[in-house]
Length: 212
Image (cartoon, rainbow, N blue to C red; front, side, top):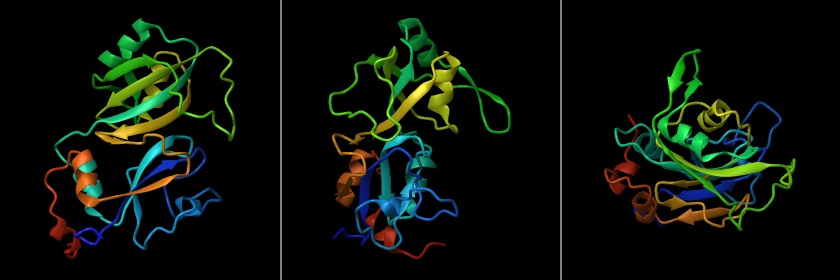
């Protein structure tokens, strides 16, 4: 048991599942995973219905603020499959920043980020639900960024005229998805969890204090 009494999990969120335990819509929920999560567990951040990969679940309500609302930006890395072959010139456009449309209709130039053209990792299995035509021309990109506008990665690849077919979050800072299978759940020890996320200003005893 962690000192604070809180629990921490990572999951590999499957395709076609929302990052919630409750929804008024008829959708696949986190509670459909084959794991008995404790009461009060919630997702930190989210992946949309069609995105896959690393999602944090915890009973500690402070994690969202410490991770996504702090002054210290935290890197998030995505493995992305796009239609057609991406050139190095197009990848460089992504690295330097591209213009995307954000909520409210404003144009936004993305912050410079890390982009690699990669081979598909061996442990990434083909998607079983709504399988993709991987025999058609495509590219895999590894994109690391610190900002998170709505559907940002999909809009970025669209800006270089490559439709995003598959989006998998593979890491947040040093917290890695690894070879956790789709739908898989892994519980983490508290100090290791915060160390890998590079969150230094947390206090275990504060987690059990009443929220103001």
